[in-house]
Image 1 (tube, helix red, strand yellow):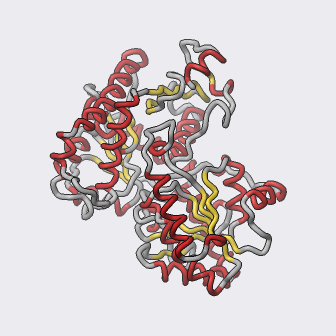
Image 2: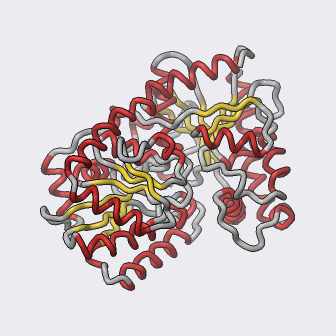
Image 3: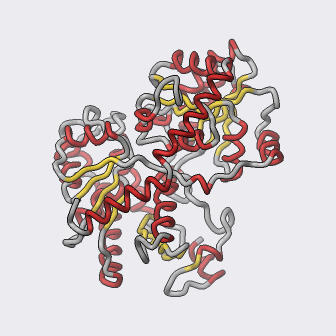
Length: 443
């Protein structure tokens, strides 16, 4: 695909302007939470002239090497297919350990001595090399690394300039095996500052043994990106996915992954349907980059989809559950507008941007107690919290909201007020103030 774009548009040294490319044809904007948070942040702080000429280095084996959008230069790193597989397997192994998913063998020794670990470190090495090469040209003030797959990159950046790491996924010191402590701290200690997504993760990071400077900043969204869909757009969404006007819609927006807990929502809906037969569960999302054919090619999304479909058959609610797969942004807006409520059923969740999106549309939310955003939810005031291991509790809360329109409206309205804490403006303010302190050596 990258060669096709180069042939189509040419490849000037400054990179292909994104404005020349057509979304959906030439590229797909990643729906992942990190992208949805970091890209608006960069646009805002560039627009406010807080920073100039930022570079974003990330894995993209099918895109042009360099793309320029809104003053941001996207530098794409590619791996050969044989290295992509090894990198993906190690990335998933670390993901599973941190999320408390125990797979054998799960020891650090097994990880470090496996051939795949060299592919994981190779990816981080070429990221570090690209960043250092760019630094020699651009003279950056700071390196800001996002998420665990690039955790070793900071360790490999041999520079005296400050390095900041943002940990986007959950952090629970009690679910990480003791033998992994030295391994993770060795990398975390290579950063001057670590930022996590909630107060409870900050406490867990300290209890884990990290002694560097650490902060929590809630993730954020830019409300300007989301529009109120027209009636026709909502109708087209409903026609596409066979949603009747009388249906009561419970919405789950998440990639297909066992940690996202779609099975919990399905089991709950089976109970709800006995009392409210017009209920429908809409599961929006497909796999991540890791499970896509263009990405790492891992099969967990398709396996999980098969398991979920089997579960609906076993529970005899195939007609009550709709799997939409990937939807475009307009369809996502229509899904929120049409829903009666949103559920975040994750077994583990770094934060939960879908809750913020739901609040933006004044929808009541029912949130897993294992999600980072749960500390912002006051049960019965701006949402509801439930134990993801208790589908009965979830079912009872869904029934309560579907039967009590006044309560649902109150939770949605109060949720919109809570959204102020996670508005892009607040995120820009907090991030900017912290980055200034770090660069000036005052943090």
